[in-house]
Length: 142
Ligand SMILES: [Zn+2]
Image (tube, rainbow, N blue to C red; front, side, top):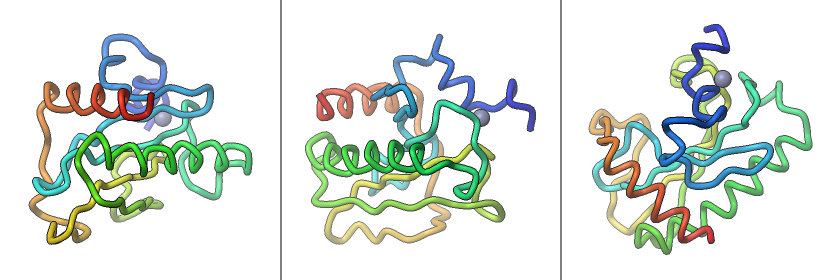
């Protein structure tokens, strides 16, 4: 996929979807995931602002920045989405890395949520709900 068509590069470049960005640092942005499980609302993605495909392609300083932000988000989802904890994961290449731009998932967790991966119940969340999630996360990251 050419970088000028990469949806994550477009998000990282800013513009019309800035209201979906919960946090922006020089190296990374945080956005609500498009597809979320009904019992794990608030599922967020941390992605580098530069187009990087696989984990092995990320230099150590970028890994540090990505996971430092992921750690902050793992705490913020507790306050923003009434979670008791979080599950972090990252798909590297096929079959589950659909967008070829490196990203770390942070899934808010609660007892009895039945989290599993991949989950056929995972479905697209409306832009309005993602905008509200970005706002809640932004406040919690404050
Ligand atoms: Zn990209």
